[in-house]
Image (cartoon, rainbow, N blue to C red; front, side, top):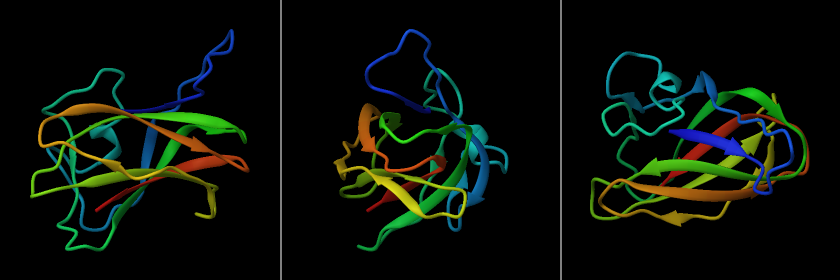
Length: 135
């Protein structure tokens, strides 16, 4: 599950989800071939997910298109994740349509069991893609 929303809920809330694979080199899906389809659900599934490549100390990233563009502002990225090696971290970056970074979240340390995380990102411009980085 990957959902992006504004932290302070306005009267009308829009939630953006992954809607396309852009750059996912080395990542794999638990089933099928479209990675975005593994993480676009409203309710998290521990059997429908994506797997990052082994990082070996260098960040591995995947970029996905978003179902709705996000205006400049504060956003919360809801994600469910775990590490399968000895340790792991994740962060979310929001990108414009040319893959320029418009907002970067902090690194979040992952646990070895599935856990829900809320990653905060403040953007300086309109975002139409999300980049997930893992270490």
